[in-house]
Length: 469
Image (cartoon, rainbow, N blue to C red; front, side):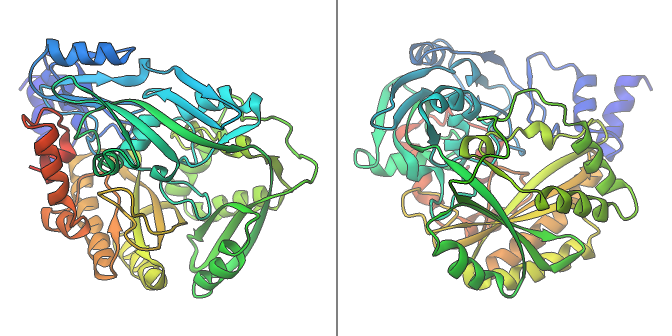
């Protein structure tokens, strides 16, 4: 048996990573993968358009399936489909229009939040809603309908005034909250299934100083604590709570509060290309060494006890490199997220803890966020007011490891569904068809919209082909 045949056999038996087997098979076309490294997909061709007209030309010049990618931070093949034309949107990274007085900016799809911050920060302006980390592309964030730690703001759809898309037939559509509102809402969390996002118009906020305040709260007290101390305080701009791995009955609540106090960090934005080797070592130690969680808690406690007053844009310009392991060759780090009605959050945390402990999951962190109900997006993850639980965990890169993760992931999804909750779609495709349909009962409306605007089903990826056939 030569090396190629061995690797194919080993991949099927779960002994090597899927990417190794794909490399051995030497696909004829380019291979598109995401940050997890677990989803290599051989596509027919790639294009890197720079303008809306170049997107239209790419769609006209090549028939068949089309997939769309940006920063490649989704973790379940949401950016690629086999034998498709893959549109890599990262070259569309320019500002189209900017009005500082009106606090409105229009950008191309592939611009990252960090690049946008470079443009708006000199005008003392900030992004209204975004992920905690700034490396994501704006259109990618729209496609997953992201959210962050912004208190009372909910998902990204609430800060977008308009989007431009190119349809499968090459038509350019301008969508707003009032014009084509159903299609507008379906684009958010639509994962590129309806058209190619080419431009996004965003509302902005003023920049300002924020002070970090940290408190420990019991799990049972947290919902009332959030309602009375966080949601009711209009000076709290950002908030999340971290469950302590050593004791899930406690949370460390972290709030960033508007202040006039002197800055402790004078940088307006986090400098690019910092050395995050210390953070990488801690991530390794947490998951590999006995008592590693205590090391992480000690480091986090030391960090959070230090006084911190920073610019809003500084806290909004975090770099995913600080989370990146030294290598993903043998192990990879992934996210999951569950959205639970506020009244059922405590019960769900207990259920999640039982599953994670029972399955020996290498959980690095569990962060709790909040969102009001979202009535704008079609495939909404917040049909009611929710707490979200973001699970950051480590797994090996073998198929066997993925199968094990699939088992406990489906248990967590079932626990969420039993409590009226939902799970987030940008991650591994472990959910069953039935679980997807229960979590997103709006999916038939999305399918009807797709049949209308993309009748040939050109826009595809692994998520759409699995659940929205």
